[in-house]
Amino acid sequence: MTQKYDNLIGGEWVAGGAYTPNINPSNLADVIGDYTQASAAQLDQAVQAARAAFPAWSTSGIQARADALDKIGSEILARREELGILLAREEGKTKPEGIGEATRAGNIFKFFAGECLRLAGEIVPSVRPGISVEVTREPLGVIGLITPWNFPIAIPAWKIAPALAYGNCVVFKPADLVPGCAWALAEIISRSGIPAGVFNLVMGRGSVIGDPLVNHPGVDGISFTGSQGVGGRIAQQCAANLKKVQLEMGGKNPQVILDDADLAQAVELCVQSAFFSTGQRCTASSRLIVTDGIYTKFVEAVKARMAGLKVGDALQAGIDIGPVSSLSQLEQDLSYVDIGQAEGAVLVAGGQRVTCGTEGFYMAPALLTDTTAGMRINREEVFGPVASIIRVKGYEEALAESNNTPFGLSSGIATTSLKYATHFKRHSQAGMVMVNLPTAGVDYHVPFGGRKGSSYGSREQGRYAQEFFTIVKTAYTLS
Ligand code: NAD
Image (tube, protein in one colour):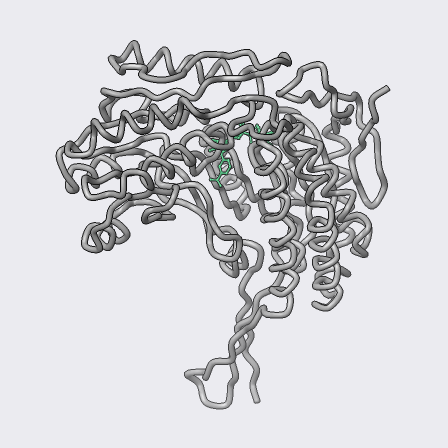
């Protein structure tokens, strides 16, 4: 008998209409648990519970909030190995990657515990004598949080922690592929001392409870991370309802490698950010833009490094790359390898489904050369272990090519030239720019987000998170 897991609504664990098995992508015979599916009626109950809890929570005082967030962060950090293993088992990241993500989630709660105490306002002189002006920030209200499957504990953490820190109530809808981490996090939050109804978990499909959450009149704002297609629709719905919205979406992140780069360093950072976490990171490098002089050496060195990568069960020691998270994602990854080749790209490494002892969604990371900017493989997000190489003459062409995308999440340059590094940091059209570092891998206390089609609304994380999770009030007093 697998264990059953329920929704958290108004402080009670509530069964939904049906249970869905959570399957380990490394071993399809391994069922992590059965997770309930919330109905639209339960979604409504969760919003009502959050609304009812809001007046008291939003005025509860910052010490109570700081203490609760600190307690949540401490428990996550104390249980990071167990949570990291759960994450690896349900999402397919390797165990060290899973533990790293759980650690990040714990640190985020600790950071926002401190932020509860640091929310400052302003007193400014009035242009009218005898009047004082105060500018303060207040909680937004009830917030719907919608998250993707690829960071099943860190992304929920970086939305839930600031939402609670600034005095909001939450209805959290995780991706239906990864309810395990969401439930574990909700269980920790339920014992943190926050009142019933402040935080609610509703598990289920976007098509069933996503729309009702976004359109619910009791919800004041939506913070969404996921694909561009779903995000765009949510933005339209929020605009129609005059609701605040924040979207973090896909990427087609460029990594430029110049002739003067340290070759070994460039190869390592490209292989890491293109293929680690099975390429399933919004910040993964999927376009490697390489200048003429280093091109041949670089391609050969990447192929050699890829030959040494071990694909396998996410929980096995010594594995570099776990499985793709689902069958549909695996089919999408493989189809893009075919699409790239049909467009004229040359597959020089990997790109096939592989077997690894247990039945799982394993794929050998793929490297495509001879690609050009207009190819679909260079314009559309694959979201798997697939990287393409674009050959360019020099820095100017590399910069132009790196910006030649509808996305703008992160970008990177490998160079020993201060001149090119400085110019790239200023002129790269991305929200996050890396010099001699992978495009994936960021700190938890500074803003995260992109430009163009990758992001919409204010930034997440760090103190910039207050832009979304608070509203500004200007108060005038006649003295
Ligand atoms: P997705 O858009 O399919 O789903 C994201 C969430 O939206 C899920 O919880 C899903 O159930 C929900 N959803 C689906 N339909 C909905 C609807 N009609 N209304 C409301 N909610 C709905 O994305 P995914 O496949 O889970 O995640 C992969 C995507 O996320 C990639 O595009 C990746 O780049 C992106 N991502 C972006 C960031 C970032 O910070 N920029 C981080 C991680 C992942």
